[in-house]
Image 1 (tube, each protein chain N blue to C red):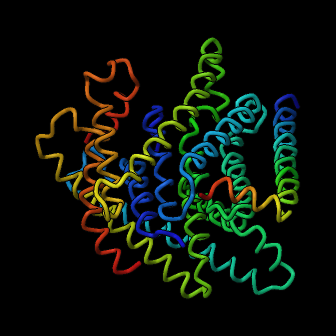
Image 2 (image 1 turned 60 degrees about the vertical axis):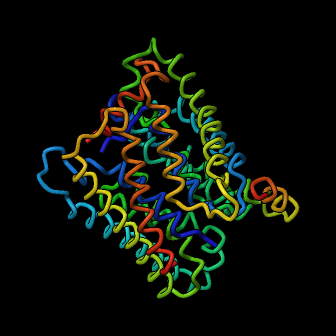
Length: 171
Length: 47
Length: 180
């Protein structure tokens, strides 16, 4: 049983810290939410593609046994190919592959896609809040000792205090 | 010819490396398919 | 985009996938040992062989190597492969670039040893942070992701205080990168 709120918190913080230059260029005058939206849409489509092809291969008797025995590897291959086509890096397709594998606990493809959509939706909420708060904090006087990693952890704490409660109703 | 050969050798090395990785993986998987080994490996990680 | 390459940044990012194992009964110390073990194995394989790959070949082979290991332990022990993401995040990106590292041959022996030590450092860091996060401040207290981020804030703030660390530590580079 996967603790989805923890997955969203961890993956959200990872994407927020890793992708900050893509999401919030230094010279931007507003938080770049379109970057967050594009990244999360790409993630959901990659996960959905991997799951769909995986489930299709399970329907074919010749490949079903082999695919079931190497499920993570198969999902990673499709996530890698889709990620390479989109010029994404290793973290993106590894994250897509592990989310796709974790989502497989739902038996039906429709349920799997819904669960994947909910997880990526949670990530989107986290990243949007993070980008907005980081942008707002730029105009505040933050002590030097708190700048950098401590500030990022504090922002994540604030977001998960509220988002954790909301997500616990869904997951 | 000089420039092409190192590239060809590098690609051959890549193929051999990938094949070696897959073979090692299949051998390790055959080993862990033994139920006794699987239980022991699971006990390593789970409290 | 270029990932932060300082050791502390890599260790902190590499700990994040451990959050996915909350409540699953997985031992954090043993998981950290597995991550450090695969990190060292990857270093021992890819460090000497990276020159023989085609251009950017090593960078594509490395995730496949991790995926194989993830599948192996997922099939054998039912261990969800979030931990391979830890290894990927911990692995220094510069090691897989054969062309660039050959320009500094004198620094390579110490460089390699430094990377090895980073694995041991991660084992201690990840195990200690996971144990600290598992401590209940009060009976019946439910550990949540928010609590974990607060613990991370305290740990990183204590590390970041000028009286604790020397100015030469590479965490300053991560601080400059991360400051907005």
